[in-house]
Image 1 (cartoon, rainbow, N blue to C red):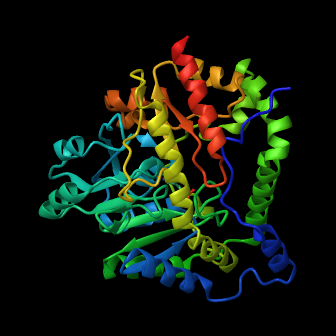
Image 2: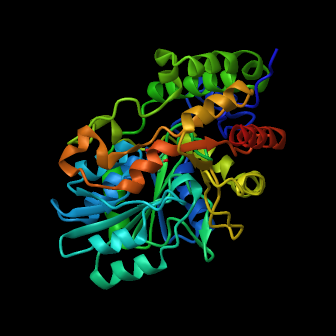
Amino acid sequence: MLLGSFPRFRTYSRVGTYGRVAGEALLLRTASGDDLQRFEEAVKARTGARFALCMPQARVGIYLAIKALIQPGRKVILSPYTIYDVVNMVICAGGVPLFADVDRETCNVDPRAVLDLLDGQTGAVFVTHLHGLAMDLEELAAACRARNVPLIEDAAQAFGARVRGRWAGTIGDAGIYSFGLYKNINAFYGGMVVTPRQDLRDRLAREMAQAPIQPLWPLLRKVGYGLFTEALTWPPVFRTTAFHVFRQAYLHDIEWLNRRVREENNPQAKQQLPAYYLRRMRPVQARLALQGLDRVEPDFQTRLGFARLYHQGLSDIGDLILPPFREDGSHVYIQYPAQCADRKALVKHMMRRGCDVAVQHMRNCADLDCFAAYRRECPNARDTARQVFILPTYAKYRQRDVERNIDAIRSFFKR
Ligand SMILES: *Cc1c(COP(=O)(O)O)cnc(C)c1O
């Protein structure tokens, strides 16, 4: 029988993560300790940020930062190729999303497209460092400063990336990190805002002080879901069993099953922040995140090695668009996003050969019906959203499976 590759995704949780949560929950200790402050201090020390504040989720940090930095009704220029709930945060914060097209190679917003849209109505520029490929913001930051327009960085996927020695997230007026289940530090929920601005820090600290603490049960449910994910993606189980289920589902377009492994299924617009978003992080989460900090650099080195192999193995294939390969620390390759005009046929071909890969689930938000009021022609984002598939790079992945993916892709184009 065909043995599947390692799964497309595994969490960055560590040995002891689940035991720690269970133990603290049993001893009623999940809410005690000053570890939020310790985590904030640790992130400040590492990133060079002046201020850092824990958030219940990155998106809440995005919402609070935009709300604090713009006048209601002002335009917020951003990439349409992102998680739709990020666009919701702009709307909930009183901003009017103005989509700027992306760059095909990096999948990040094109700085020239942003500069073209900057005008007297601009409330903020919001950039996303997608897939861990941090943007060089020097020119854009200077243009924003010259016009007194705040620059906000979504570094949810780029914790650890440095551009010219400065951490992604610390270049603009505010930077946002995520410590959700799918990120390179997993606290099951969680995020952080870093900022050089005292006024912003004080305002966010006031908002957070008024918020109730993240309740235990929803958190434990998320941890339970994490444990389930862990079991399903544990290689001995995955390669012999789960892979074959997902493979059949994908090869035969069994939609109800495909939906289960896809996020972003039903994009919906929000006008108001759901009340349960505004919570303080629970100290047990900060303890998990603190443990994850020391792995950020070695895990990045592992991913960089995988990205190098993909780059070397695929860059001569003219029908693929690959991300730039940079070894200067600016690209931390949380994933390796490649693009192919017929990605569905390619992914099916890879699945048939035992590779577990997936198409990128994110949409071009400038085309979504739920954001029709903000629709804008962004042809690059449209093509990107149709063509990106994700090659795994996570730190527990194996070189052998990177090579298997490369072979499968090469055989697809040789047919
Ligand atoms: C994960 C992610 C977010 C949201 O993070 P949460 O902590 O889940 O709110 C925002 N932007 C990007 C690019 C992300 O990948």
